[in-house]
Image (cartoon, rainbow, N blue to C red):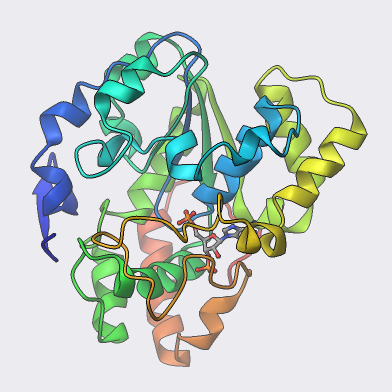
Length: 287
Ligand code: A3P
């Protein structure tokens, strides 16, 4: 694994991912595939667990059939770990897949098959905070220290999967064009059952209130943290070094306050206003 980024089609991407770009770009989606797409650290794994539980009517055992990254493969990592492309091609429909690609780089086949896409967005400050901690343990991204420089790199889009600003705006604007459900991390945190109901409806699943409540319980932070099939504890160590910090960190809204100085917050805000100018996208919280 190399701790460096390279630019692919205008987006900064881990070198170890970028070198297989043609395979990623040419991924063949099929009718009925469900894609969970997010900017990194926006609650992807949380949504993966929710969607798997919805599709399995909250059957706890069924959702423990394997670790989350095997149940819901990550299309950018097929060449780095299991399941590889052959196994994914053999998976029965409907497959649930994960990606962090920005909307313009999502493999074309997803749009050709009119696949349902669930997009989760998290406010920029908590995302960069979570990403900063994560990039310490993710071995194919540059080491993030010092924080001050990392924050600058994030604002410039010089981190893995590029610009947060373009990512969240891109999917926001694509809603009219494609089959996208846009969900906010902060809403799931505040009203999980309401958001689970929304996702279930989007997926065409008619679930009882009892089932929705069970999904809420099984996808709570506390529950997932203890669930080895959801908490990444068995993830390949060559990619994720969890010897000092685990994947399930805090799961909170507002943790950015532990990292940003007052001055960094002001500069960030100024830049944020500039980068988000003209967009109707407004986050539920974040300041
Ligand atoms: P923190 O680092 O702020 O704790 P992703 O899955 O996209 O990598 O996102 C990871 C972030 O989502 C981490 O944020 C993680 O703790 C949080 N997360 C994962 N499962 C969660 C849950 N059930 N409830 C709340 N947050 C969760």
